[in-house]
Structure formats: structure tokens, C-alpha cells
Image (tube, rainbow, N blue to C red; front, side):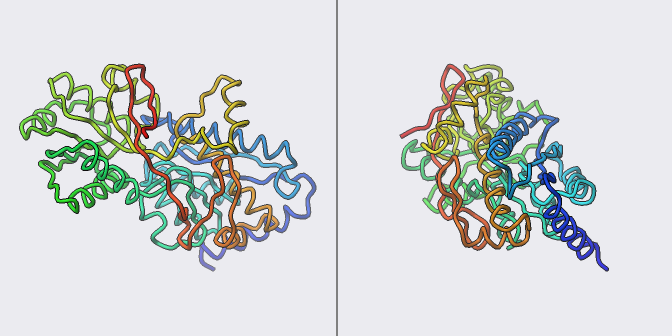
Length: 370
């Protein structure tokens, strides 16, 4: 018997057993970077998923059973993501996973969940590869890089009127994928980049790269990657006197961007693409207030994780905790969430994406632009 068949058999037994035991826990994994340079994003995922689980449990749980969350730290490292995915399936007996964060982690982990028949609802990974493979159990409540790249390129050309664009990426699945998506649309508008370079995630000294950017007289620098590199890069650009507009994607949607950049004076004026303000949906007003009353600001992907947990709970609830049937159900049903009604296509992507442009100000806060 293959490992995939064995896993599915054991999962079926676990699901059947859960249905016969009163108040049995429903094990759901929350996977993301809880340590390392991108731990701020892991915190967003955890806070959102935890709050949703608490609210769902208070309302009676899923099919009468309580959610038990299991934290799985992948540190945004693909090998570690595979390890924690196997642990969630083989040791923790999860029926669903909310996560991961980095696309380079989500893609290999999704194969493990597919083999085991575990439902995966992703709150943050935007690489098209995640869903383009057609895995029946994989969904996401965020958009895709090809959609996000289109928005960025259109804004660069139509609004900012930039002519000399330098494109930098962090060589990861997410960062390079986003940069390439933006580049494709930019080139389609007839604008050819003056520079295309990669940097290595974890680096902090970009002075040589900045010198090269200045040498091509770039009027806009587009970065595909996360805040951990975007912050030092924009700081060193400014320290060397570059006045080029700096733009990135949803990988910098965290207050940590301001911290690693060296303060609000460096973040000020930076543009980024992200989904329409998650805290503005009428359906989530009460939840946002509860977060803020508790002293936590639900920034970035917090409400995406809350939404992902709602999707998981609704699907499992309709299909008696069977994750395989729950995935089938999601392909033909909508779910009401704190971010509005979510409907998925045959790939598991949202049928409607809502990327818009944001800008950071001199107070270290980002604001959605009209």
C-alpha cells in the first residue's frame, strides 16, 4: 500500500471515529513562519486563525465539535515546510490546514496535503503555481501574482508615468514570480526595464546593487520580495541619494517593514499592492472592533487567516468533517466571511480579486489610494 493510500485510509478512519465521539476535537493546522525574518507574518496568520477558531467554538464548533489549533512553524523554508506538513498529517492527524505563508513553502507542502486528502485553505501565498497544478484540495482566499503584477504595472505606466524602471527580486518563488508578472505587463505597455537583477534573501548589504541602480538612472525601483530585504534596500537607496520611486507588493504589508527600513522617514512614499483594505468590509466590523479592543491591530493578512478558517469550518461543517468532500463542496458553493462572500473557481482561486495600490506615509502607516 502506497503512503498516499495509507494516509487517506487512516484519515478516513480518524474522521469516522471523530463522528462517533462526543466533543472530539477537530485538529486544524496553522502553518507559517513563526520564527525567523518573516515571523511578523506568521503572527498575523496565527492571530487571525486563533480568533476565528475561538469565535467558531463559542458558536458551537464545527458539526458540534471544537476546533483544536496546531501551530506549525516552517520559517518560510521549503524543506522545513515539508517536514511540518508531514508532521501535521502523520502525527497531528489534521483534517485541514490554514497556511502556509511563503509560496515556496506552500507549494511543496500542498503535495503532502493532497496525498493525504487534507483540506488546504491558503490565506497569503500568491504564486500562480500553487493552484495552476489543479490539486483538488487546495484553495486560497488571496489573489495571484499575475493579477497583482498587472495592477502594479498599470499604475506605474498610467499614474506614475515612470520611464526608467529597475526590477529587483529576491529569487524566491514568490518574489521572482511577482517581479516577472509585473515585468510582463510592463513590457506589454511598451516599457522596457532598464535593469533586472536578483538579490539573495537574508542579505543586508545592498550598496553595490544600489550603485548599479543609480548608474542606470532609474526613476522607479520595483521589488519582488518580502519586507526583510525591501526595508534595507530602500534605506540604502535613500542613503546613497536616490530619489527613485520605490514600489513592492504584499510582501511588505507589515509594520516590520518600517522597522527594518530604519524608520518612517525611509518607508515614507513607498508604494505597494495589496487587497482592498481587509478591515473595511461591513461583515467584519464587529471582529475588527474586538481585535482592536484587545489591543491588537489586525494588519496585513490577519483577516485573511480569519477568513480562511471560516472557509474551512463552513466546508467541513457541511460535509460532516470529511475534508475530501469538503473540498468538493467548496468548488460549487460560496462562503460568507468577514471579508465578504468568497467563491472559488475550478482551480481553487477566488473568482474575484481586489488588488489595489497603497502608499506608506511619514508616520509609518500605509493607506489605500483612490
